[in-house]
Length: 113
Image (tube, rainbow, N blue to C red; front, side):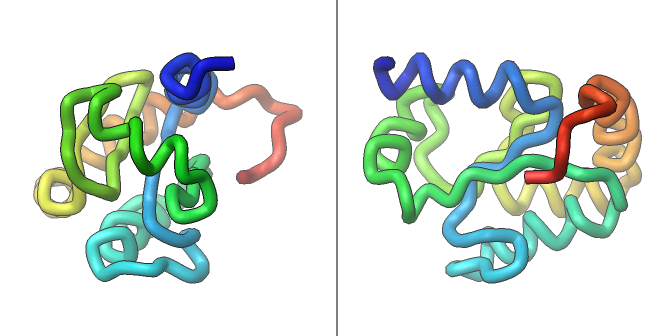
């Protein structure tokens, strides 16, 4: 499968998804750490992709949504943005609303990522 098809599939199959450097438990950069912490603070589960473990995604994700940096947060298949936008949305309450709605779309039997 082409890398852009893989990315598209990940975005479409995960209602809440963050592409980040590292993992939520062990972030590898400050921006990824702050963005994933904002997602964790909401209390809903979310999927993540560690771009440092997948060179193809690391190299091609910026052209997928024309967003040059990491992290990238997708909610309901749409790019929300990176760290700054996520933190602004968290402070205003908009992130909680968007995530609460998207979280309803997780299949009941699916386990956390």
